[in-house]
Every structure is written in C-alpha cells, then in structure tokens.
Image 1 (cartoon, rainbow, N blue to C red):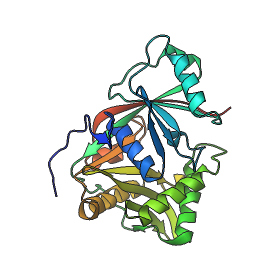
Image 2 (tube, rainbow, N blue to C red; image 1 turned 180 degrees about the vertical axis):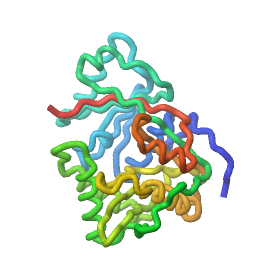
Image 3 (tube, one colour; image 1 turned 135 degrees about the vertical axis):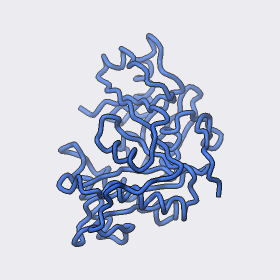
Image 4 (cartoon, helix red, strand yellow; image 1 turned 180 degrees about the horizontal axis):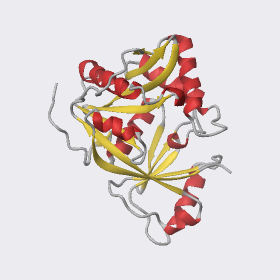
Length: 274
C-alpha cells in the first residue's frame, strides 16, 4: 500500500471538487451515511433526510467566502434550501484563516475556525492507558452506551434525538465495513470512544473523540487514537490520517503527541435554533 505523503489540495468527491481537506472528508462521511449532495455551482447543498436536526449533515458549503453585501443573500439561500430548519450552517471551501463577514456576525452567526491535522504515521501515546479494555463496539448494549456517553459529553441541555440517529448511522457504517468505532471500557462501562472511517484516496478520517468528563486525563483518548490508527493502516489500508479539532481545545495536544500536524484551517459559520 502507498506510504508517501498525499497532497490534499484539489482532491475530488466524485465529480465535485472540494479543496478543503476538512470539508472533503466531512462530505465523504455524510455521503457514506446516506446524505444527498447537490452541486449548485457556487455552493454544495448537503442534506441528510434521516437526521434533519444534524447541523453539519444539513448545510451549505460555499465555494468561496462571501464578499461585502453577499451575506444576507446566503442566509436567504440557506432558508430556501432548508425551509424547515431551525439552525443555520454554512461552510466555506477555503484553507485560509479569514475574517468573519460583518453581515454574518450581525445575523448572529458564530464563526468556527477549526484546525485540520494530518499524519502519515502515528506514534503511541507517552502514557498509554493499560487498565481499560480497548475494543470495537458490539451489539445493542454497547451502542446504547455510545449514545449515553455522547449525551454526557454534549454541551447542551437539549441535544435532541439526533444523537440517537447519529449513532445509528455510525453503526451502519461499521457494519458495512467502512470503518471502525472503538471504545474504552472499564468494568463494562464505556468511558471514551472514537471512530475512524475510510474516505477514499488513502485517507482515513477520525470522528468524535469523546471522553467521559469524569474519566479525563487518564490517557484514554491517546490510547484510542493510537489503536484506531493501527487498525486504519493494517485493515483500511490508509496512508494519511485526518482529524479536525478546535485549536484552543486541550485535546489537540493529544493529537500532536500522537504525530498529527496542522495542515489547514477549516472555516464554518452556524447559528443555533432559538
């Protein structure tokens, strides 16, 4: 299998060109989960009919950052594409860290500037957790725990049933052989989890590294990242691993310690229901 570094610029999703590696892998995952992608020329419409409350399963990916006077028309475009949506979610296919358009800020949209990290080879964590049982999720009981863990980690009092639907989509992908969902268990209790999926062209994308707030700083996340990376290379045949993270979050230190390096920035804007 190929081991050389791949250049993410300009890789394609079918016939659709997406420059941002973060959004390229995001959209590829949504398609694996059953999302519909429509090319409008100046944007892509990503729609997940089975989970309409999933913001980043129902969004517009703009081909470029809106210029002056273009902000409100994009909000109207989103409303036209998703008339029943209570949220607004707009991604921008850029790899640069740019300023928020004033009209977006005035409309209450929050900018999210994420770091897109890649690694060709992963390093084991300096202090791996050897007490937990690290294994793939299996059966209804494990997947029920996966939802419960996500609820404990979710920063909202009302996460909605999209977490249930999201877990169901993850489970379908693992059963189809598109990737793996690992958990860290102690005494049969799921304390941490993550997914890793084949998104094509030798890339494997990590998803939702989550650790129970009561079990953090115990090396669980790093151990899971390392274990999944071995699976990705040996079973999925991945040559490049991708993970997207908040550059201000402490978790990014875990990813760097495992061999990840920031390659791009990912820009998005959203507004919560309300």
